[in-house]
Amino acid sequence: MLPLYDNAPAAGLLAGILFGYALEGAGFGSPRKLTAQFRLTDFAVIKVMFTAVIVCAVGLWLAGLAGILKPDGVFVPTVYLWAIAAGGLFIGAGFAIGGYCPGTSAVGFASGRWDALVFILGMVAGTTIFAAFFTQLEAFYLAGKGPNGQTMMDLTGLPEWAILAIMAGAAFGLFRLGNFFERKLGGPLTAAEILESRNEISTREPAPPLGEQAVSKGV
Amino acid sequence: MQMAGPRPFWHPLAAGAALGGALLLTFLITGHGLGASGFFTRLAAWASDRAMPAWAEANSYFGPFLRANPLASWISWEIVGVVIGAAAGALTSGRFRAMTERGPRATAGSRFVYAFIGGALTGFGARLARGCTSGLGLSGGATLAVAGFLFLLTFFLAGFLVSLAMRKEWV
Image 1 (spheres, each protein chain N blue to C red):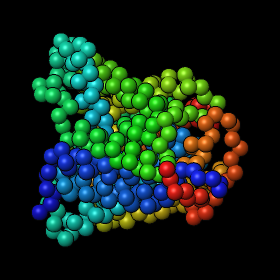
Image 2: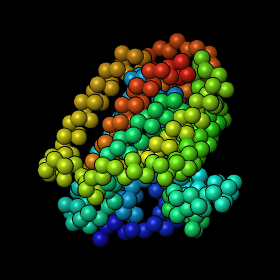
Image 3: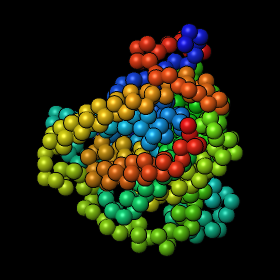
Image 4: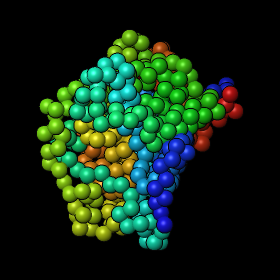
């Protein structure tokens, strides 16, 4: 029966290696590519994130149907309305200003980005400031608590398959919208553009379709 | 682009499928998803304990982390894995480059200042939210948690709005 509840170092390393390899492959070690999502020129963040959420959610649903996953066997975070809403605002702002989120800063660092290391130092400082004011923040931190591990099914009364179908439909629409903006605004940032144009102002041609991009032998 | 350059990034849907597969495997093995900010919290607790042990151990947030080695945790191994996996991907594809990545009009100095400010806001926000884009957005979203979608909503809202003021630094 799954999950195995194996939290040994080897499980952490394996999960991390796959996580880091996929994020790097997506281009998420680059703060210019990451923040281009918010300028609407590159929808990789939304496409990758929502695809991953749906693939994993469908996998968990199927594992449950097949009877190999323990019901309520995986961790589901609980709503703390005000703290989570405010925390999301802080992280969204931090992402737009600093160019990373916590996971992608580790990927940027591993891809050679000095600015990612500075972002990490900033996170350590921000976390320490939070800890220093925790006593004053505690009431806000705990306010608006929802039911433990509340899911969209609990909230709406809809079955899991219906939530998944709505998400898939929303993702399809969002990806179409993203393709429209990418075409209109010059195309997503490519790896070559990110590594080439260090400081000259580039007048970018629209990016070629993916199949036509140069594939090198690497180094 | 005839010359040898970096290999292109993966198609976003392929990368998303790979990430979703990695996340699913993590849930099935460990019972929880992927995270990131939890490690930086432990790193901050550890660093505070090095710099100001009396303060850190008495602090109501860091104190509980410091009853044992704060870095001895699953998430530390996961982040070590992230660095190994990402470095392997970058090195084998020609995408590794020691550089300060910034927009053409930004200076290295301004990039570092904004990276630090952005990091500080993110570190503070992740403690408030009890997670970040990975732990709440990705992993919470995949369990269809209301908390995950609430986080994603305000995360993207602030990202789009603040980004309007940051254009000069990136393009």
